[in-house]
Length: 172
Image (cartoon, rainbow, N blue to C red; front, side):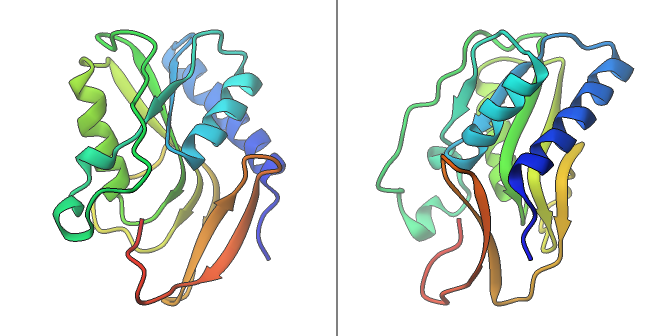
């Protein structure tokens, strides 16, 4: 059974409030990774009452498998609301799997400045990490079989779906 997304978002917002309160952080820059991370980031930003514009990253040019799988057919420009120097950033993605998407997103973020801190929030953290990357804010932890993935469908309504992996399709 897959978790209910609105309930996970409520839990994540509560975790984020606590995370920022303990660290004395007010009004972070919320940045989502295209496309599921942007959907989640929009909901979190609203639940947290953050008034700053939402940032959007398309990490296509920063992927480490770019030369192997080629360019994604729908590359979008990244949009960050401001210079990130000294800012506290909440980086949001839908599923944390290998950690490679987050590594690429961090590389791109630092091209926009040097944030004071970056906290990672993910809707689902699953098994299979290849890099030492850990989320500070997690909606759900899931262990999936080697032939399964978890996908976020949306944008409205947002829902999680377990799907079988097609061995011919490159992983995102």
